[in-house]
Amino acid sequence: MVIAGEDRNDRESLKILLEEQQPGLRGGIVQIRDPVRLHKATGANLSKRVRTIVNKAQGVAEKQGEGTRVACLYVHEDLDGVDGNVYLETRQRVEQEIRRQLGCGHYVLAVAEMEAWMLLFPDALSAVVKAWKVPAKYRGKDTGRFQDPKRILMREVSGTKGRRYTESDAPEVFRAVIDGGYHRSPLGSNRSWSHFYQDVELCGRQHLHG
Image 1 (tube, rainbow, N blue to C red):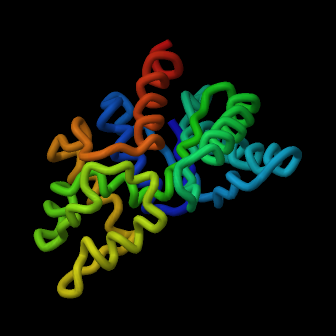
Image 2 (tube, rainbow, N blue to C red):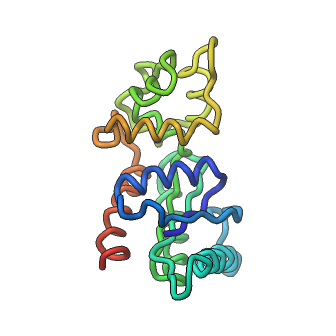
């Protein structure tokens, strides 16, 4: 299993979530650091960028031992926009190109960004920092419709005193999500979160054990 993402925090977060859903992957997930800039690319430009990631994924797989193949590739990117038709079109376009080139891959396009996923789990955020509280107006909502989830976490969840949320907190938050079992009952909805978990389940049946 190979993970590509915008930065280390995103990749580590995905790794935590994947290992929870597929425990057999522990010790078998590798990461590539190449930048991911796919959601605005089209045509030959998209094909070229995906080929770069696929080549790197195959290269790191080969380093694990002779005959080692990429069981599946997960590529994460933030849409940096709210849920809607653009999300669906972009996700389909990029994932089709990944599968055309590799055959087994998933495009994890978070709306509006991965911080929107965190807002589904208020108790996990409070488990990381007790003072972090998700305001009632953001609970039980479609977090994919929030324009700037990162700002919400930094200014409203964190409050004005004490430790303020930063992007480097993401892996710790998702570890708290898993350790507390909160992933089983998100408070609200986010279509990209649901798509991600559907992909992981499909991947487990078709790519890893198929």
